Length: 125
Image 1: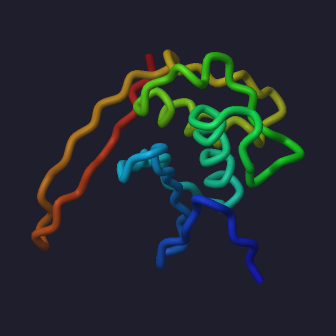
Image 2 (image 1 turned 180 degrees about the vertical axis):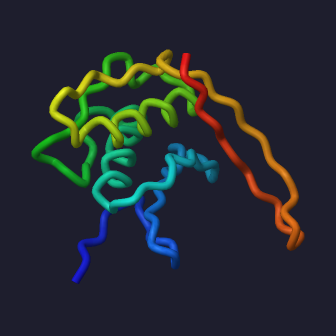
């Protein structure tokens, strides 16, 4: 039996994706696609910290994120920080995530089967 994390869902091909809804809005921030549910949940926790602060209900309450300046980040910066936090939280040489560590480009395109797909690319600074 697999534990279900808030803000995480499993794609039919096995990847885990995470997104979070902005407060008082229907808008969502795409937090990325991950190979484990735990990494996706870590991304959600980082974004939740930025949006709701340190007293939010995290997936990992014993290991909450602590992101300096997190409450003043834009949605695009939250996305970058959440992805960094998820990918760095499992390593021993964890560095605090920063919103300026990467540049980001977003866009969309029509797929061959007629669907619109949105994408975000991170470009190392």
